[in-house]
Every structure is written in C-alpha cells, then in structure tokens.
Length: 310
Image (cartoon, rainbow, N blue to C red; front, side):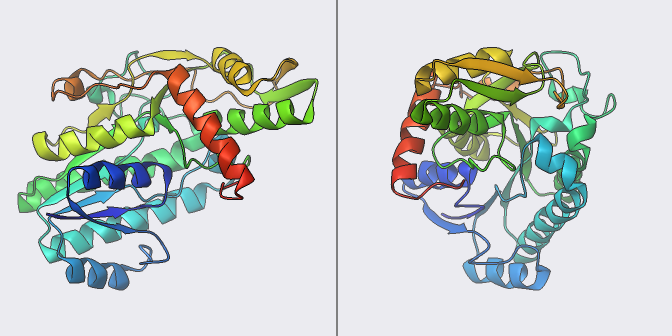
C-alpha cells in the first residue's frame, strides 16, 4: 500500500511516516518543497501521479498563542486552502482512505471536561486561536461532506497538544512545551537567575508525545470508520506552572520562574475524553516525564548540530 503523508517534515508528519514505514508500508512524504498544497492544480497532479491508497493530512500552518492571535488571516485562509486542495485532489484521484488531523482547539473555550467528541460547537471558541480552530472545524465538515455525498470512508482525528523530537522551538511561533524547553535550556546554559513566562501559569493542559499520536493514526486508519471525529490525547492534564517546573528540573535550571500576567492565558482547561480511541485498542505509552527528557535530549543535540527550528 502506498501512503502519502502531507507535512512529512513537521512534528506529527515525520512521526507518522516512521510509524507506517515500521509496518513495511511504502510512504511518500511531502512538504512544500515537493508540492505546494496552496496550489490546487499542482496538488491534483501530484496525487494523481502517486495514486495512493491512503492520504494522511498532517500539513498545516501552526503556532502558539502569539502567532495565532497576530496572524488570524493566514491561519484561517492557508489552512482552509491546504486541506481543501488535498481533499479535492484525493477525491479526483479516487483515493479510498484519508485521515485529516485537526486540533483540540476546535472545542469551546469553556467546555465541559473531559471533552467528548460530541461537545463540538456547543459554545464560543477561545478568541486567541479561533481562526485556526474554525479552519479545523471546516476540515471536519469537509471530511463528513465527502462521506455523505460520495460514500468515502475518510476520517478525522483531533490530537491534543503534541510535543517531541523535531518540534518547532521558534519562540514566536512555537507551542507552549517546546517554548518552555528552549527557554529553560538556554537559561540553564547561560546561568540566568530567572525566566519570565507568559500568563499566570494556572491554565490546565494535556500533552501527548508525538510517537503516540503516530501510532493512533495507524490504528485509526485500519479500524475507524465514522463521521464522528476521534479525540487523541493522554487523558491527563496539569497546570502550565506544574509543566514549567518539570521542564526546568529536567533542563537543570535552578533560578526563579516569574509570570507575566499581562499576557494571555488562553483556554482555562483542556483535556480530552479518549474513550473512543482507546476502544480501538490504542493507548498512550510515553509518560510526560519520559517525553520531556527525550525531547530536551534531542533539542540539545540538534542545537549543537544546527539542526533545530529556532
């Protein structure tokens, strides 16, 4: 079976490529240097030339609170184009399998916890990343529209906050955990006496090591067939303050941590109900402590080799 993984050099995509290759599958990984998914014609021509049995869409314009809040047009327009062009190309080429990766930010800001799949569109979104969230909600609807109109067995997966080797550590565009890793590693190595972090540290977040997500994609592509999107997470959360303490400890930072409360916190709490995906026989295997240690080790080595996005 030939599988196209879009966004193959990103955090999720690179792990998904490895997971399918470990099963002996023929994987064609693509990024913008291979095909511009913002160009509909080029996307259609490429997919037709490969004739895959499955496409995994892990390609997206992503970023943290600051980037989402500053560039909503790009986060909405680019992501709508990327996913729309790829699904259109898949349909024209008659690709039987498609896995769309969204985000847990699709759920309302003040959602009941843990978040079940059915809670989608039951309240207002978090304002700081609503453009990105709406793009992902549109992706779910487009998957279901193809299912309804053409009888496809395409599916959507909604991962929680991902992290791991190969993440984006650029402070203005990264998510919270890689940003914390970079801040504390640099502070430890420079001997800084304090690190100032955004917000109050009180929001509760859930994190999933990227290899666990990749395994969930493999399992779901084989076993799941429903128009209800599928949550993928660890099922456990902790405060950003607790997370910062764990990262600081592993990075060897012994100074003070201060919080800039003038900066936004984002959604107060977000932890997914993962009952459905566990029902497929999947469960997360990498603990947060193990994942942080592994990611910091990778980050330090990548910095020395000048091979890190920062």
